[in-house]
Image (tube, helix red, strand yellow):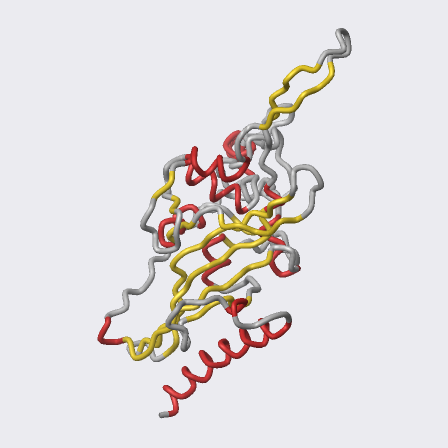
Amino acid sequence: MKLRSLIILVLAIATSGVVTGQTTDPSSNTNSYKAVNDSWQPSLRKDGVIDRVPHNNYLTPWQPIRETDVLWKKRVWREIDTRQKQNYPFRYPGDEYSGGGMYIEILLNSIKTGKITAFRDERFTSPVSFEDVQKTLVGSADTIYVENAVTGELEMKIIQKQFDPDNVTKFRIKEDWIFDRKVGRMVCRILGISPYLDKYSTESGVYQGSYPMFWIYYPDIRESHVKYEVYNPDNDVFRMTWDDFFEKRMFSSFIVKSTFNNPQQNDIRSYKKGIYRLYESEKIKEKIFNKEHDLWVY
């Protein structure tokens, strides 16, 4: 009986791979996600005391909405500022659990590997290649003249710019708000997402504004979203995927445009200035809330 117990114990230890002096497979402590940042290196040892198992996250498809079930629909555009505290997960560089990489790097990696297609416009009419996206990120190479330390002559030097993911400080999303009478509630569906890149002057480094890099059809990126987990500032055990993060509306944003009495599709900034832009955004949010309430009451 003692011999049998000893054999079972040895087999259990061998199966778990916890043997003194052996290298533990780092994937046993992570989600086995492929890193999206070239400089990120996985740990060669089990980084932690918890015996984690690989998290197999699956995509939950959207419930189809029939046109006959739609009582009301409006479209809004929102802006997510990653410098706000609630939006810090967008700027998190990644770890053993998240896979190593900021959110913008996850998007770029999905475009690079051909999992999704980037578009120039929010109507998804003009696809762009990853090479074109790279030109948008870093631009063309610059040439400067430097003095040769030996001869004293000026020589031309080519400088290739590097992409800094910290310069992506905003994301714009396009979404539809629909009252589905079949489920009896307001349903929000994100249609597209676009990262905005901050541009600075080459000579003085003065901020010149934020410009859209590309647009991505949101249903296409959901497959990549479900593979990477989001940083939780309160608890390292409870992690959610990027798909959960967007579907549960865990981000902070404000409306920059809507189809409420706006036939020319103008941004709020074109007719409101300063703090009044935020007031107008809150008015649109209130209109959506009141519409759902009215459809329930009447």
